[in-house]
Length: 178
Image 1 (cartoon, rainbow, N blue to C red):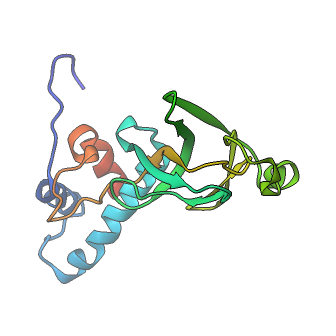
Image 2: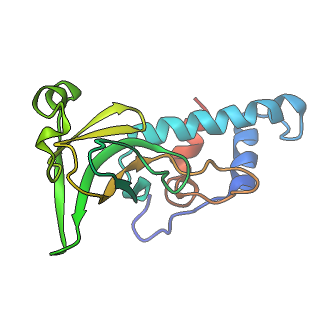
């Protein structure tokens, strides 16, 4: 990109036209219409997997219940979190935030395997994709903040402008042509 030249964003229809032009095909053909969703999905999946964009970070809150160390991650802006980056417990009085350290499930089971040592949680571990456990067991109800990356809503006719079409249109087209 030349210095001072503005970035040329694109929308869904411009992406479709560009891909069809590069493929030397008519975008109205049945074959093109059938493969287009896979082209978009492949391109976006590949870019979001490898790109660590701040635009894909989301915060959400949920609750921890007394003596229950398990919680499900709340939904992100669109869909579920792909990678949980951090978990915080909020204490109301005095207002403070406790940053939980990531550890293994084995550690939590060995060190905080029962509710006998209930107190403010200090650690978290991913049990499954959207399931988290904490340790020690919570001694009261807490608000939990989670943050991490999620995959934004895919580009489509009904969602014609995305982060990728706005800031990385050339990369999106290149990924769509692979």
